[in-house]
Length: 197
Image (cartoon, rainbow, N blue to C red):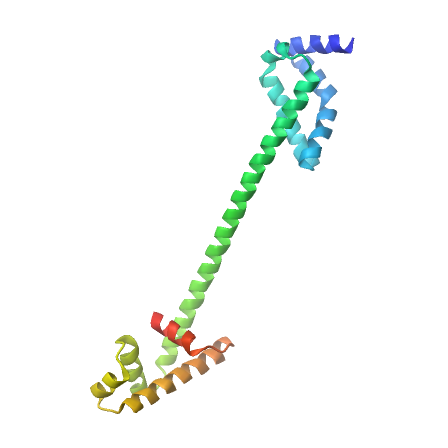
């Protein structure tokens, strides 16, 4: 009797009966929902997926007359829909993770760029405060990449005097950076930032 009633309802659904569709929906929804929850582990998501599954039944209602076992048909449809959902969810998660990583990388890079500009501006400020002769020698050796010997010849002083000015300037920069930013830096660090100015 139930099978005959179901067959009758499916025939009516195939012809567009919303009343028979509601009957079938109410009959099978709890079973399909329990089945879907096993896949997605979320009651809210299961409700949405069940709505989509029954919507597919309605959209393909003309094919219901050729279905031998509606219950088996419905469960296969539910399983396939869950698999597709999980596959797309995995792709979306991977995409979201990639976007998140890109945003974080960009954020870190932006912060690094801002920090670098801050360091460079500070170094420029410190350089304006050193004695004029030391600044002249420092800029000559740094900007023009002049050797100590060539700088000494141009300025008419000894090579050791040029070296003394450069060492004093570099020490002053290291001390100033440590005082301002709260960390000690290596010579290589100072040189690398100075070369970027």
